[in-house]
Image 1 (cartoon, rainbow, N blue to C red):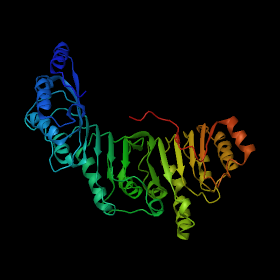
Image 2: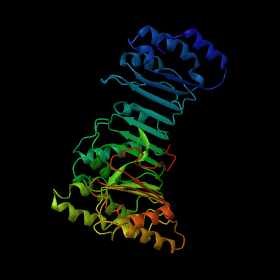
Image 3: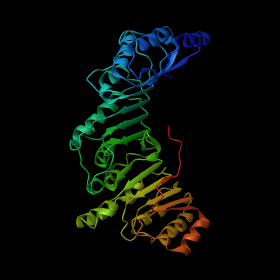
Image 4: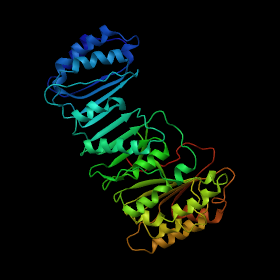
Length: 396
């Protein structure tokens, strides 16, 4: 709250005795950036840092944050595992807590990207890292790859990496899905990463993911803001996936095309066909895949998507979002052929959303009704933008 009741806080802390504590400092008490208030708060907190397991400083004015982290500069927090820092302002100031003595055993760190240098050098045992307000260049793809490679090289035990470029919001043109911007850096192997979230342009996402070999990655959640949505990668990554099979434990994947722009650029159709030619080989390298989503993809008659009858034996969820070039009868055929293959799971969930002017799939009423009896079939109307992706997995 805006009122700081130091006596009550002190009493609570004393009554908790030797129990570990979680400390959250939010913006409410500092609407006027009150320095006396923050000094009072720190006088109460500092004696109990020895049993602090989680410290979150969220959305406070920078001059308040300066006081907090000046006090923490030489402090000791021997059991601190979770640290989160975000400020309202953006200057060249950097917090550098716990500089003296042994570093706390941090496992979970959430900071603004501009603070990363000190923290990644000081705390190398992290399991989860969230970088907010990452300023990737829109054209320096080699620099973007090098940025991610440096982080992963410094944190060999990292399991969850969330990178959020808050200045980017909308994907660019069709070439972001069809053409890969490759950097000069060789693919980096990271043995521990299981979750990778990249909130940035599709071109940057494609470039980053095709520079990595992640044998234990399971999910590409879209962002920490919406962890149950999947990151969409362009179908231009399929050739890399077919060639190297870099994600053998992947459970969920979303691939995007550029059908909506193909009428404006005739070359897109040719490039689309070339990319989709790698679909079967790419999916052959993700045998644990349970969920597959396609977004704005033209399957050109359905031959390429028919490979789902031969790959991904654990596949149960299929989402077609604004896709063309396939039919419900084709999907029915995929289901029937999968049912005859030893060790293949049947498709159980189908979600379709189409363009308002293109309802060819669900116009096949008879097949749609048959599918509805065989699995959980869901059609999302063109104006229904909620619940586009079904909640499939408990993503951390």
